[in-house]
Image (cartoon, rainbow, N blue to C red; front, side, top):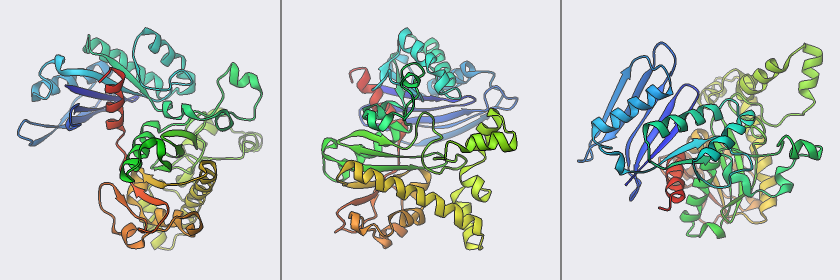
Length: 400
């Protein structure tokens, strides 16, 4: 049996098809620039002999329905999905489930209504996620559809962690609270961390750092999130590629009063022109390292601010957990940037974090330990696999 995972964005659809008994990826690809004059569809698939084939098509793709039809045709033509009866379920990434969903959920009309109701909390993501679900239901009739929510993993946070110090009615009537995101990633790497340590997830206390253009931290106790850095929206928390992260809430008022900035301008500033980009003009950490080597002081500052914020959250979550078994780095920066890992862990021997400089600098692919053998806290690099996590949760939701 096979599980199809779909991630529908505003102008794209990413997909992966898994064999459910061994989680081998049979096919993967992306339909990009939907609705634009020049769309493209690229991907790969594996034949019965294990050979991988790649393709790329450039053509106009009018809407998500057309994109999903292209995907379905390619899956059939390649032979990896000759019959819809091979599909045990389709899993959909949905960004925001609010308080309504704590686990992956089979889609019905009630679930669709709740996802639509959450659009004000995720106006850029939930509409596209919902469109992907509705189109897939038409194209794959009779196949169970499962929604896997980015926010669900963090629904185990206690009120002390998720409530803001705002009037009660803003929470009760307007749903203003911390939700957290990157849930599939934090769930996957925290479970893998426990496995690498030979522990059951219920026995493992870890801090997971998902570091990429978007970045978040999570404190995970016994397999459950007890705190996370992103809040009502993905803007709060760590310094990111173009997002500012934590900010004095009076700053937008100051900018509105003194610079005449309206809500749209403030939203653009804080979400798209801040973070690493705002500090030094680029949001790619690789380019920041190149500029540091050339003596650019703004790049030095950007790295300093990025790692300082990471260390603040690391210390806070260590206290919340009471015991730390593993510190996990994942995401593009977390997996590949030895300097960020070194700067984050520097001077934390008192917390039981003893980085192995050679192992950290060695790089490599796959899961690996970069702390010394005698380190009480294991420092781990674990490549995230959100699609696999969604596939696993999808199968569980349909009783697999």
